[in-house]
Amino acid sequence: MTATLRRQVFLLAQLGVRHLALALTGTDADGPGAEAWQRLEDEFRDWAGRFGINHVLALPVRSAGEGFGLADLAASAPDAQARAAVSAFLEGVEAAGERAAQRPFRFPVESARQEGGVAAAFGTVVSGHVKQGERVRIQPMGKETRVIAIGTEEGEAAEPGPGERVKLTLADPILIADGSVISTVESPASVADQFEATVIWLHSEPLLPSRRYQARIGAQTADVVVTDIKYELALGTEEELAANQLQAEGAAVCNISLNRPVAFDPHGENPATGLMIIVDRDSGEALGLGLLHFALRRAENIHIQHVDIDKTARSSQKTQHPCVLWFTGLSGSGKSTIANRVEQQLYRLGHHTYLLDGDNVRHGLNRDLGFTEVDRVENIRRVGEVAKLMVDAGLIVLTAFISPFRTERQMARDLLTDGEFLEVFVDVPLDIAEQRDPKGLYKKARRGELKNFTGIDSPYEIPDRPELVIDTSAMTAEEAADRVIDALRARGRLPQA
Image 1 (tube, rainbow, N blue to C red):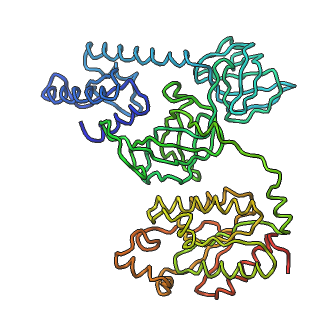
Image 2 (cartoon, rainbow, N blue to C red):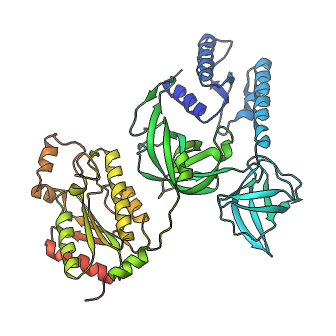
């Protein structure tokens, strides 16, 4: 067996696959290749069996053209014995499919509307059955109601099961969000926003803890962050490997956190509501899969505490509009110098501010972080959360960080409401930044004494749509600070002069 085939079987086993067929073209079981084929089949069965995949079909076929699937195996099998093996295999797969009907009722809502004092929900049953008159719970909101009618394109349905597209008419005019899950009251799905999960990574770029991705669980969507890679799963062994990131075709047990509660079942109990697809937040490209194990206990014990003095009250007391000025750019571009000049002007104008500088933060809050890609992501995640708290306190916050990755800058922006985040790209050519080199860091990086240095052996991703671009090769720090103050006034964050 090739290493690629071994890896594929391993990953399929992690997904819960228990029925696996291997079809090999161009091999005659009774010809010269029979001995080699038999050896491959034995290795395949043994390897699959290590992961609990015991329902295995392996046989040579005459051809496997485009669109070739299980149903084509019988026709392509070389003899009657092989065709009988295919039929027995397919019967086992069909029996396994029947288990979905025996699981609790789950109905992801694709769309919903109100119709004359009742609610109508549209979607596809993914497991179990539901009957007219049955009480159901809409999750994660938790509202309960009763099914008063079930319809399909052909008419009324008595008890729809998995795979059937239906319209559920509910007794109450409940506003149902798209992506909600409807369960029976007797066997509802669980609801949580933090989980342990097996994450299978498929993209060429590694998974980084603290980086924000998007999760899709059925029709539900949420932002997801891997908060901790507990251990990576070694290929074909029970060994648990330490890891701080996950490479392509790797699998690891992780703690993950979503930005809102979702309805789910453990993947081992119901794959339809326990499988999470991880996608890129901008492109929608699939990056990996998450198999939900269970909700973390702290997810049930941590709640948002209501406070009477809020951001509006704190801002009113300070007579200002809080916001974040996020200065980003290469080392030596002038970020800290400009941010310092802007804060001085704001202070003279009577505003309440705080400057978060990259070097200063690394002496305290982030002193445990280095400069690997993983640590850089976590560095900016923490700064973004602190900046959000300071905006909630009513302050005008200035941050001066290289913050090389667009994803993390977008994460910081998404923590705030519209208009509260102003990205200031302090632009300068690399050669000029190297000539300045105020801390001697470029020289160290060029000599190989400083690894993962932005602009040399670590990338800087230029902002797509910053609110302000400042070219410090063409203006002084004082001129740049004036431009920032003007931008704040133009956006209504400061009163006009």
